Image (cartoon, rainbow, N blue to C red):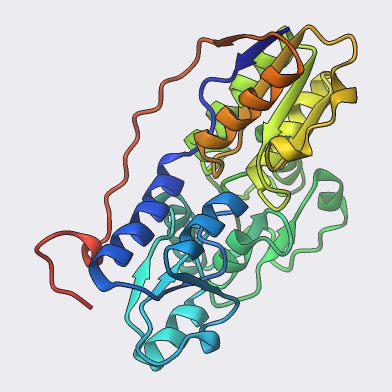
Length: 312
């Protein structure tokens, strides 16, 4: 049996930055460190950080006075920031810079007098954060079929932004429908879909064409991981979303000669290695990596975790 690994796969620069921020905060300030919600959507990463002294909380009110507080990579609303500020909590923002860019686009468009349409998944932390960055209620759109029934008070004063981890194809379809219904709507096209999401989806397209089955390593609540599985299935290649090797079922590999493996942007490479190790117990494997984009993006760390900077 042959295993072909996607290129690229796994951690993106935003996830690496967020985890690095938490690790450095532990080194500088000691434990406990408090993180509002999961720093990234991956159980392995979260459990590893818990073991090192990180406490993940649902709300700011769960953090004791003076607790070092980190906002997750998905971003938070202005209300959450203000809540932490009113309590004088020392905070570090681990929001992905590409998510922050979407926040700024939404604010800039609203300041120009436009109503904001947000293309994204209801309940996702990134959507909640972006929605809470503007003064007025956003109109949330999850799929293209919802566009036809949209009623907008001032259709000539309308802008859209998107969640960064969506499917490129689905997002383009929604944008096309919006432009058809509201010709004067403004927005960034699909540019808000982050580079890592685009690269991983492009890799899965190629991988699906050369394999009989694809395993996507990622959490069930990881938007970008779900989109990778959905994309492979839409192409016609059976695909399974797994947390790790424990989720693998031997029955999946009946009459399978080539297995594709990829990982969502919040899944560490060690999980890929564990999956390969498990598959080697099932069959003789030849493992290779497909040609693909080599990502070299790095994001700057916030001053609170840089050496020789004033401490919180």
